[in-house]
Image (cartoon, rainbow, N blue to C red):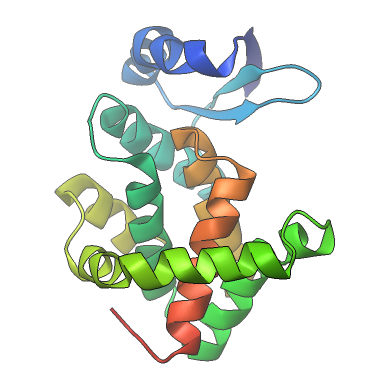
Length: 198
């Protein structure tokens, strides 16, 4: 296993992924993650067979994301549906989903990024978009995404941790970063708290 660092700002990354990284992925098992500290970069890992379970997941998700990047579907919508499909695949019950989604946004509250006014604004946004979000969650994803999430397995250990890792890496690969991902967790936390199950 070898990792290559490609220094690239956020506006350059998709073009590099679709050009260089997609070509590498076509030739062998590759995964990537985006990073912004200490500088913006793409960390590309070339895996040697036989692949461990976590490497299989990373390679499969990378392949899926590379197929989604050229599309015009809003990436936050893709991540929102991925969150729901991942929890379904892992068989998380309502209480487990609530814990998962709470952990997904609690850091923003703890760091003072969201105060009471900020959360009220998110609640208002959710209320105005609720019908559309519920319809989105009920609709199937593209076939490649559905197949990817159906194969997700927690393996040994905490299924909530497995869900957080899978969702977080998928969002990162799509370029949906921490605060945007936290907002999506908040929306699903509120929907599940209200008993909605799209």
